[in-house]
Image 1 (cartoon, rainbow, N blue to C red):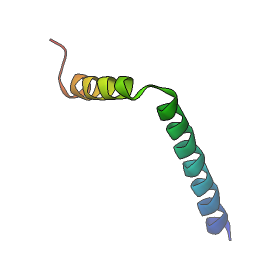
Image 2: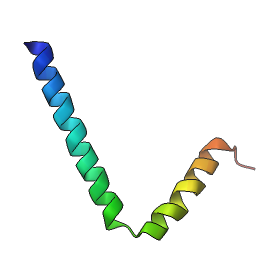
Image 3: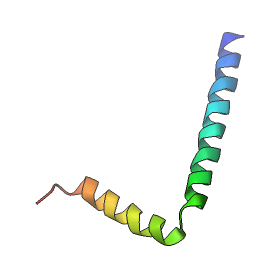
Length: 49
């Protein structure tokens, strides 16, 4: 019973997070998302010079 309730609450949390993430993604222009994403991944992968 407890495990079942835990699954429901976790699922609800994930759904809320996904909706919030989609809302934030739609709020920003697509160009900004495309520009920001590669620079942050390369910055994280490469050490600063």
